[in-house]
Each structure stands twice: as structure tokens, then as C-alpha cells.
Length: 332
Image (tube, rainbow, N blue to C red):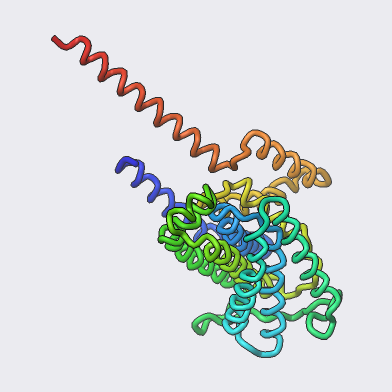
């Protein structure tokens, strides 16, 4: 990457961050809710991107881990405990369950593994719906309080949006570090060729389990934010459709790309709202738009962009070689 390209990317990042901070100041309550939901779903999709995009392990259970985090936050905060305590419980619980759920990945792959995680997602939904003594079943849990952060209340929509945005920034920094660490390189090696990774001395068993566990823990983090965002939860939002939505976010944005979940969540959360001017047709148009994206960009939006830029670099390098060759041939 040239110095100019690097500076342009930095400038673009600064503009986007500034826009996320300044522009929402003029939004109404519903607009801030949608942006907060985008931040929460991005965190959950980042966890699935680690499991699927970087480690190559298919999971249809991410929505269940969001539900576990949400119920942990709802149950504990309505009993007077702080949200940070619920966050700790959700991370530990989701990490442990994700680690256990990773064991089938040591024996089965691809659609077989998808069925295993699908079974867990169904089991979690049944627990949410039927264990009234814990989750209050179909009646749900209401009046979920929003936290105080460093002495500042987040009861109003704008402060809570900034709380969600700050949480997304912290998770993003942690994920950026993880991907560029030896662990991240091991995850990519596991995705590309497990046999070759094993021959290079990578403990594929441990890294497979870690991919599931860390990705699941991020789902729990998203859930602890989702509960105070909606301030009411019941089992319906955490059925299989949420896991499928998160899977779509990762694939449409670009599986295995750091910013893929950001873009995929924006399309999944914001695009239906932008299409509401069509009234009763907005869901149909949204479905058609997603299908067209997957047809013409099977590697995701960022995957197609990366391929386009790679082709341009290849053509530019070929042109430079041709010029250099012609100069050598014409030289006396």
C-alpha cells in the first residue's frame, strides 16, 4: 500500500468516526435506537466472523449466545446488580458453552457442523420459552434498567447510543489486536488448510475450540447490550432467524474481512428502514436486494472490492513490466 493510500484510509476512518459521533445528535429516538441496534448486531457479527470467516467453522448458534447474554443482563440488572457483573457472567457462560459446542467441530465439518449448532440454537430457544422460573417464559422480562457509566446515566437514547458505540470501539480494538496476533494467523491457517496447519505445529484442536469460545463470548457481549437497549426481552427475538440474520451479515459484508460485519450489519439493520418509503413492499425489496448481492457478490461486498483492487494492481504491475521490457529491448 502506498503512503497516499494509507493516508486516505486513515482520513476516511476519521470522517466515519466523526460522523458516527456528531450526526446522530440530530436524530430522533427511533433513529438512535436503530443505530444502537446496528452497533450491538455488529459486535455479535464480529464474533461469528471470527468463528466462520477466520477459523472456517460454520455456526448457526450465534443468536442463541446473544439470547444468553441478554437474559443474563435482564435477570441480574432487574435484581439490582450492575450491568458489568452481568457482562462478566455472560462472557464466562458463553465462553464455556462455546468451548463445549466446539467439540463437535473436531469430528464433523460443514453442513454436519451446521446441524449440530442448529440443534443447540433450538435447545436454547426452548429453554428461554419454557423455563418460566428463570426467564418468565413467553411473558418476558420488562423494565430492564440502563446502566450508569462513570457516573453518567444512559437512560436517554443519545447517551445509551454513545455507550453502545464505545462498546463497539473497545471490542473492535480487541478484535484488531487478536486478528494480528499469532492466534489470528493460526485461525487463518486453520481455515485455509487444517492438515497443513497441523503439520506446521499448530494445535488445531485447541484453536478450533478457541474460535468457537471467543466468537460465542462476543455474542454474549452483544446480548448484554441488547437487553438494556430494548428494556424488554422475550424468547421470540432469539430464535433461529437471528442466527441466520447474523450469518447473512457476515457473508454479505465479507466473510474473513475485518470490516465485513460492520458493513453487513449496516445492510441488515439499516437497509429495511431506508426502504420503508415503499410501505408494504419494503421487506420484499430487502429480500431481493440481499439475493442480488449474494448472486453478484458471493464473496461479500468487501470480497468483491478486494478482488477488483487486486486485479487493478495486477494490471498495473503488468503494464510496468511491459514498459520496462520495451525499454530494455530498445536500449542500445
